[in-house]
Image (cartoon, rainbow, N blue to C red; front, side):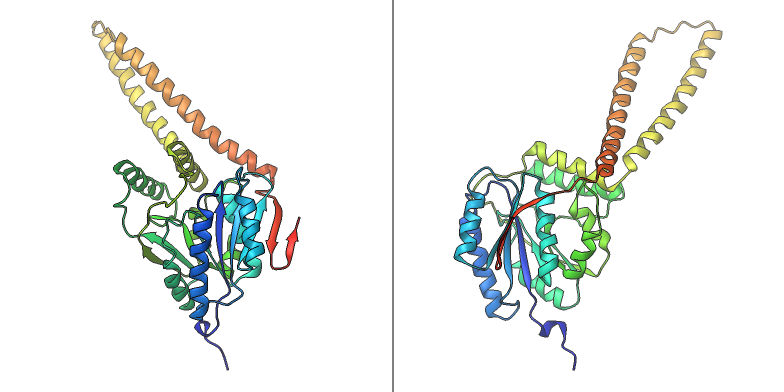
Length: 327
């Protein structure tokens, strides 16, 4: 007799990367504990399920609070990275740990702006056979016009450049053990998980939710960091920017030949061409474009340089789980 997938309670790990989150951790842990207990009582998940807080080299009391949560309640586990490695690497550290211990993992940010009640629907779709369930924002009405415009532009541009990305999806998703193992096969140092996960290719679906306001603390993604993250995503997933430079160069060369022929014709016809303003503007325009082109190409060369070194993406300093600590 075979058991259906929905008859087996999934061992779920919720992975929460943290960086200087001492202001939100008390409320976040309380809400997650309530949600996990609800799912256990309703037999949607196994009683061996856990919440994993990954401390990404925080400078405040975040790790001390994670240790306290772990010692007080076995529901909470913790991973401390040896130094700050960025949100994507911290998230990957938690997902890799979950791949070895859980049937499925849900990743979410510590501020819980992503509605945790969407986890119920994610588990339902997992039981229906989905390996990856993406949390997708149903609306951006609460965003400022600037943030809404730039976010939507980013998704559209990345798609046009060939990046396979889920519209209005960040890093709130459920992944099965099989999908987590597939993710571990991607070895690149330059991580952009929301672009890599769709490449895994297993059966997937989406769950719509409404994003709430941050209830405490400050956003860890100011404008400068958001722009840097967007550029990282584009250059990590697509080589089309380099091809666009080539296409633009070909177009400029063609226009230059036409202009040259025009000026030669004017010269032989005895017409005087002034053109100092247009000449100076052309020099500045082409000079700026060349510097931009060199910068973009340099970005790709830099990524290749980092990949060839094969440095570890992160190092776990401490792991807290039911078996105690490992260092």
